[in-house]
Image (cartoon, rainbow, N blue to C red):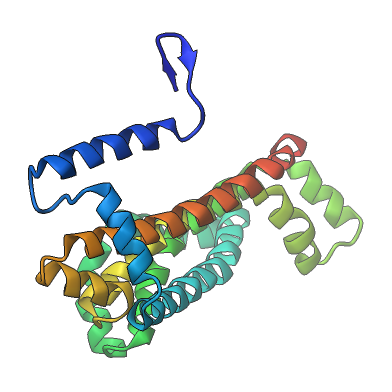
Length: 250
């Protein structure tokens, strides 16, 4: 970011927004926005409590389980769609429909089918993340040079060899891009699941703090959630940049 021709250090915009937040909070414009300094003080008080640690564990378990299933199912599905026209024509309309549909409307159906426990929350998280992973993987596979595949066949590569040694690695930049966006969507999925299906994890803390107007506690938990999502997203963005040369080698 530049101001009057001077390049500011990275994350300067967050510092400016933090200063603005502190000014608004100190001015007492609304009870919904407490001072940022008070939020951070509350944050250090909250993270040591047993309720926060249990909520963090419940949320992390549902989140990573949902991301795991979306990756394990989404990447092979995307590869098959990219390499097989029949499968692509059968699945692509459904993938596009679920990607654009308001998935929150499906939560009551999941509650009826799978109950009110952790299973439904994990499935909700998976449904939020998997579709973009499938589409990105499909796009990566469709950009592979056909000569690479023909060469593998001429050397007697089995379908599994081609799957793991050509399709996966050649489409890896797009796969990581899809996973990065899927992780962000999974954060929304796990919180929606914990708020609508079973009041556990961070969803329970959000419900507790908002209903009792403990806005400093509410924002403290929200900052932790944003920080975790941002960190995981940046890790995948770093990996995506590291393997970007695969796109050129296609």
